[in-house]
Image (cartoon, rainbow, N blue to C red; front, top):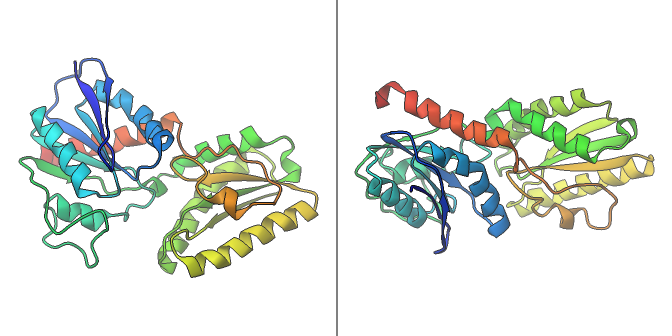
Length: 284
């Protein structure tokens, strides 16, 4: 009996029984941010079906060297000769250079590195290939946003939808986030005759930029409320509602606090990313 192994950012290890895998020399290593047990369970549930087909592990912790080494060791114990790394992050740039360094695909740790890493690459006896895309690169996820908005809606013409994401610190990169989010938001606009559909990023980890966004968000919600419209808040996150309840505290809005998970399209995206790696000429 094979297992889906989950390496948490601290020490916990969870095992899920799965059915027999088809023969494969390529193991699947999924990197994810990690959060509380509910957040982690949502990722584990999305990945479990993939473990029916391939040796599969999850490493939580944002390019955390400890969990990544544990994940590599587990796959090598299953005698894989190649590892396909799928990074379950919004941006394709998230921790990419650090990940490349840790897996031996880059000569130097990027300047500043990452708080979850140190200067030592991983000990690896296998070939590693890392996916190049993030969730932001998949416009098809607009279908998830549309489902979330429709589930909250009662009268679209008198409702405005606010799609709210984490966002990066770099201004140019943030503009790219907003462009890609807005492209996905077209699915929401097509799904119903909402009064408006707005996208924004909170810039969560950058205090000065975040403060300005918080003012804009609260102004938007209050303006729509004063105009007699309801605001539907859809989180542009892998799972959960993040800090948005605190940001919008005291204002009227509707939200179900669901991110992209749970949804089968996320599982399908992971599978497609892994299949790209497996079909790469370098693996044949």
